[in-house]
Length: 336
Image 1 (cartoon, rainbow, N blue to C red):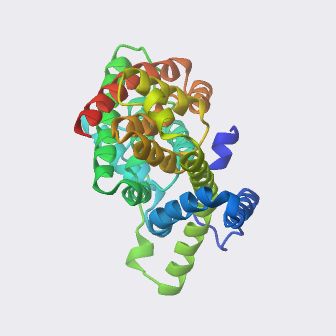
Image 2: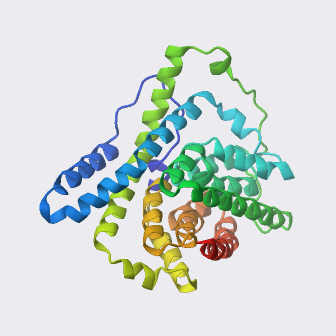
Image 3: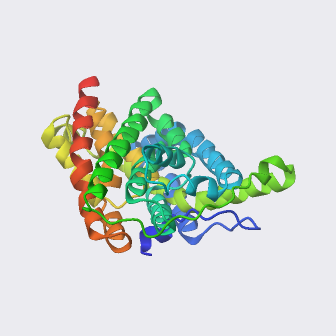
């Protein structure tokens, strides 16, 4: 597994609360140093931008990590896996619902998706899960609402629509043998909800804490990177640059698409950047394109799909998704 896989593995809770990992410790130190430096008079604009973002997002990040810890501890893996192996109409709906129960960033979701494929999930289900999960999962939904308010609902619903439509198209491609088949037949396994039926406050609190810290290790450093980048952009990049190059038109959305494709940041990290694009352009479509392109056109994810599922699936993913993303982006811009 490449660096993308290592950055965001959604590991199930272990027996002890894990320590803060090196990446988060380093990024946290950098973030704190920049925050302290920003209080110096020459950096007043950066200070205002940083404090503004922290004020907007701190509660959403905290709530998202808590929800992620709850999901990680109480929802059994088998419950998610067993509904993704059958090749029927409900499987795509199940894939979206399974994504809602996940609590990892886009690269972590990719690792989970590949794992599901190897366990027997169909390619259409895996792709639906991959597209819906980074933006439709519960912790990420909370984070988006922290930035965008009720407008985040459009992003989440848009991600679900693209995921389902893409799943249907991939089902047709599968029927004609134009993509890879499942790796193997999925095994039926028992699903145990004993952590709920045999609820123990002490064990549950520890389990949720383990999930909380594990998820923080996976995603919080990405969030800090995103907030830093967005704050610097907000403080020092002229507003007219966004309107000139990333405005609510075809050229602007193509530039946004290219920017998101090149920028190697996990989904939690792109959220504050998307919010800054919205602040500068006052257009909903461009941040939506920016968010969705991070899943549909990211070169690391396409490379991992190519090597773990197959080249046909990897090639078809951007071909099928990019037109949908741009179309919904145009529509969202018309609502702005």
